[in-house]
Each structure stands twice: as structure tokens, then as C-alpha cells.
Length: 421
Image (cartoon, rainbow, N blue to C red; front, side, top):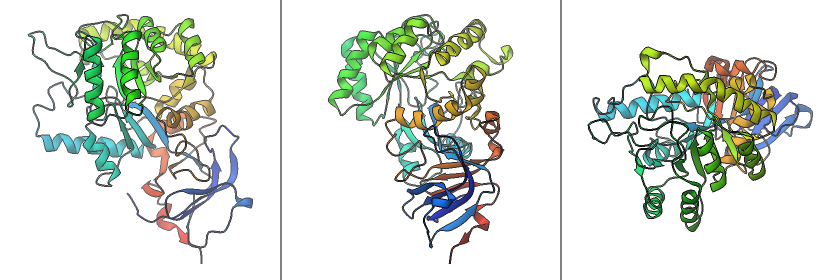
């Protein structure tokens, strides 16, 4: 459901504004006709807005729209690796469109797709051709031969899970060219593999892939072109340390992070995006390749211990789910996993709002509900500060507003809105 009216006054809210401040009961959110927040705070201090439609959210919790900093919207875990080859391309595009809508309706108004989607999806969402989170794209993954992004089949045939393909680079010059190709094609973020992975056939999470020195080569290229964030797929300890010494902006997964890594992350202000949804997902041997299952079994408890330690020591976190590896449309279950490892519910919400926006370079526009910010907002049933798991169920996310436009309204709150005379 999507309505095009702008100029809204949400009343009867319990406001969590994404700044870390205490919740405000009986709060009002004013959104102007340009889709910008003009007021967020106590009802007693709210200015008049005669032209605004009034939506009474009935004491429910109002928060900023969430940012998922690690998704793969071009594929689904239940599909086999030849799905895109054995279906009509138009059918595959519409499948992706459904996943975009499911993600938005889960409460994610901005998403960073870390390889798979092409730039056309980003432009289609921005132009209003399809509903979905606003997108930041990596396009493809940079890796060494035999590394995490190398999915050559046993017979030598090149094949990738990603419709956009991969960037295999083994020397400094090749890394420069790969980075230039990505920038040419419109990448918002450069994703590089500094370790092996769970799902890749030719390596292990403990293997080191792209080195710290090589990351600096990539950094020099992006800085020559106005700068872009660098996200590192890093699971084992060696890969995590290489990413941190190389100066990446975020470490994705970070399963093997140790005290040295936590020290570096805290010192550098690097975001950890642990994608715990993949760790807490049920292990189904019959549905996984043997090498994938065996690696996952060995890493689950080890990961929980390490991420719990990073939370305890105050590392910066941003929400990321690796949706695609796990099912789409339940992104905010990640908050429950962070809380289960020791994070306060408020800090988990900040990881998914303010911190995610900062990581994407959007902190001056998104991630908090304050005057002057873009009006992305989520309303949920229940109290996520008491039980953050209420956000895991998409049916509890009753209202989603993006750019000041109502995108989802399963409680039909906007349908009964009144316009102030």
C-alpha cells in the first residue's frame, strides 16, 4: 500500500528518535510537504500544521526507518545456483522486486546491497518505478583467485551466485583496475574480501584473502574519485585484522575478531556488521553443501563469544543481516540476536538507525527523527525497549513511511487520517 500525499502529523506516539535519548510519550511527528521532518517531540511543544493530515498511531512506538547495511537482494537462499540461468530474466527481475518490497515492509527504508544488484535497481527505486529501500550498491565483490568471490566449478567453468559477476584481482595493478571498473559502473561502496568464507568452495574463513597493503591500493583509487566507503568481508581473525589495518570503514561478519581487533575497531571507529542472522539460522545439513555445513558447525559458538566480547567492550555496530543467505523480509530479527549477546535494546535500535546511516554517509539526512531530516519512520506494535523481538515479525511493523510517503499501513491508520481544518 502506498499513498502519495505528503504533509503528515503523527500523534499519540511513543517516540524513539534514534539519537539515544529517552523515549518521549505522547509525542508528535510533523512531516512537511517535501517529506522532511519539521518537528519531533512532545505534543505540548508541537507547532500548528493546518494543512497536515493527522494520523493517530494510538500509543504505538515510532522510530526512524531502519538501515540494513548488508543484504543481497538479487538472490534467495532457497534457490539453487543456476536459478537465474534457468528462468526468464523478466521473471527474475520481478522476483527481485518482490524482495525489495518485502524488505521495505519489514521496516528497512534504506539498504546496502553488498553485491548482486545492478545500478538499474537503485535508479528504479529512486525514480519511483518500484517500491523498496533506497539502495547503496557494491555491484560486485573484489577477491583473489581462489578467494571468497571465486566460484569456479570443479570442471573449471566460471560461475557466480551473483548476476552481476565478480571482480577477481591478484596484483596491485589488477586491484586498481577492478576498483576503477566498479567506480565507473556506479558503485556506492567497494566490497573486498580479506578472508575466506563459509559458503565459498575453495577457501576457509581462517584464510587471508586481500591484504592490508592491497586495501590501501583500493583506498588510494577511491580517494582519487571523491571517496567511497570500503566494506570488508572478513570472517577469520587474520582477515579481520587485515581489514582493520588496511583502514576499511566496516568489517562484515567479524566472526573471529579478537582483543587486538576490538582494540583497532574502537580506536579507528570502524563499524562491525556481524550479520548474526546467519549464525542463529537453523543448520540444515540436507540443504547445505557439505563444506558449508562443516564450516558453519565449527564457527557458530566461537562467533557468539567473540561478538559478545566486542559488544561488552563498546565497539561500534551497524545492523546487517546478509539477507539472501538467509530469508528476506525478517531483517529486524537481527536486533534480537544483538541483544541476546549482551547489547541493550536501545543500542540495538541505534545500530539499525543512526549508526547504519552514518556508515552509509547519510547521517546528516537519515537515521534520526529530528527537524530537517528526511522523514523515514516506522511504527510498531509492542514496546521494543522491553522486548526487541517484536520488531522481528513484519506484521508488528504496522506503518512504514519513506520520504514522507506512507508505504505500508496494515493497521489502516492513514486511511482514517483527518485533515485539520
